[in-house]
Length: 321
Image 1: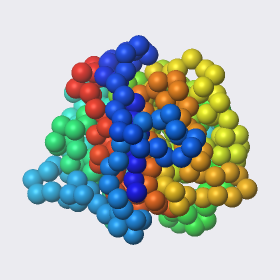
Image 2: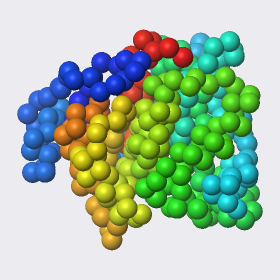
Image 3: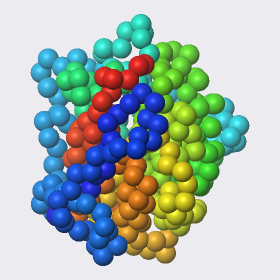
């Protein structure tokens, strides 16, 4: 089964912790841990039946954005690293107004037309439909030490990935804000409004996305995490306690995971994501948690990607670029 638990609040340009929030619930409980959390049944599906909707496929008459490839090797925060990244620019962007921004970790997993997420196609369709703002997407890979491999991908796994993504600190946020994004902003006009800036990732990229918003909510206030590694790789298991004991931050969080996710010496991924959802609910965050049957891959997250983006970007028309 796939479940979704959600606590939502009306979006506002300031997103300053409204006292009144809406809670949608039907009495279904995920585990004994989640007994106090409201859940809404979405559908029933085994992992092999996860598939894409029409929004993940090209549609006739929808303007197509462009994707360009780049390299970055000037980091002082992650010294000695080189990485590739790509930039998606929607057809509707003309440079007269600032675009919204969404950054993706492990960027190569998002940009391909035949992958799980098919970002350019999904963005084309949702932007054309008005379901999300005109958004520039930056799809950035983790750093390699030494020379870059011939092409993007997992072979070899980027050597600096765990250090950059799993460390519970603001270093990766500073890398984005002070090193990578300024290079991109020399070419494109991007909004400074943190409510129009989102960040996304899978696995270790998911906890990385959360860390960016957690440490720099002044710059990013929308988070999307698929199969997030909120376990003890480099201290990420502490986030639920940190959330519970810290004043709520003005961020919106989307979490996805499945009952078939990892269970190893670092921790149990399904339990870790349930703990994150419970902590966010306790502090009345604007969040949504979709829990299915998938494993540690992008099949489930990719199948719901268009609807996840709609939820994350809802209310965007009320925000000032």
